[in-house]
Length: 162
Image 1 (cartoon, rainbow, N blue to C red):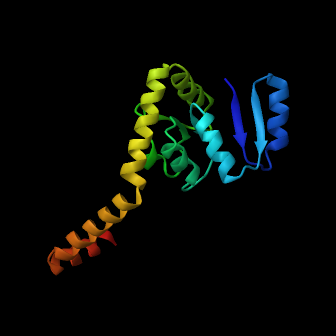
Image 2 (cartoon, rainbow, N blue to C red):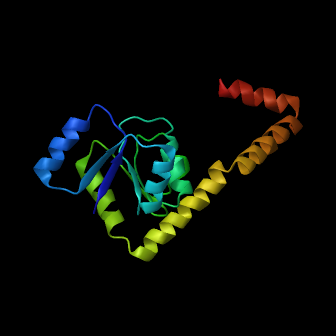
């Protein structure tokens, strides 16, 4: 397995020392342009984001549209919208080495055919959750349905939400 890490940050030296100590095939690519990121998605067999805190990373949505299986930390804020565990990837607890190992092992255990299916499922999920036409249409349907409800019902819903 080769791990490609795009981007730069304060953990670079720590990661470089880890790579030297563990003799693992990790390539630190540094900052990448949008075009380079698209090329990386096209080369990849999967996408992993082990964030400790990340409310709504666009990279997960991009990887889904690119048809990649996902390995996401439960701290990735949009994992519920982007990942269905066992369908297009796996979720793990970034602070729990056993959880990380289990998710990575499950991913590595997938056959080429299963990886392809997971990738196709990622695209389906992206279409249903992030396609602009679908999102706008669903939003308008909700607004129209809400406005068609009697005023009393809308007031009761608003009061109970507080």
